[in-house]
Image 1 (cartoon, rainbow, N blue to C red):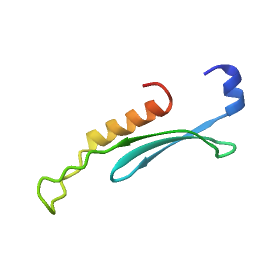
Image 2: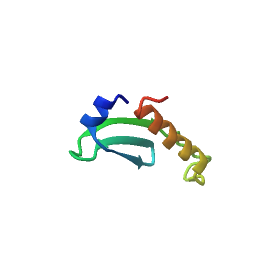
Image 3: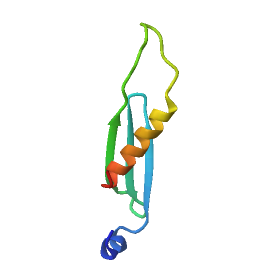
Image 4: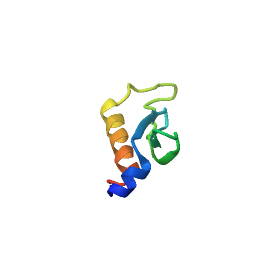
Length: 76
């Protein structure tokens, strides 16, 4: 990020919102609480049988969090 943009934006705060059907990553200006950027990645819902809920795949959720974070910041 250019020095001039850094001075205008100041410190930033990132937040992960992990829901049941999506992962969101949000970036805020820490001084004004203004939402500067966000990205959402849908989570594939899998039900092996009707009424069954499989055990969560934590590795996949971690990858979704990382991907949403990078895409929000324009890195991926």
